[in-house]
Amino acid sequence: WAHPLKRRTYEINRKSFFISYPMCGCYIIFSKNLNRFYIGATQDDVSVRIEHHNQAMYGQNRFTASANDWELILFIPANDYPHAIYVK
Image (tube, rainbow, N blue to C red; front, top):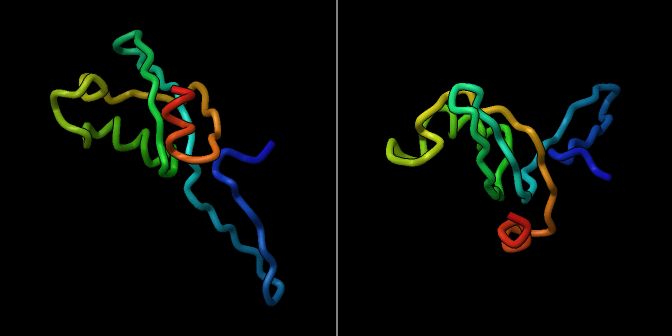
């Protein structure tokens, strides 16, 4: 099992740094204000994706735009984006 963001640590010249790169997957988010779940798929960093849902960056007429308190409930990693869509 890998961390959802595939975080890796490298040591160079006695300094450690993290490299995070996007991972495809299916996610479930929840809004307390709406008392609703939303299921989505992403090929980007899931935390950035949730920020975009909370800021209504996918359009004002989208379902997730009606709330700004979306929280990640579950993330299921996928091999690629079509696999993430299939899992969704």
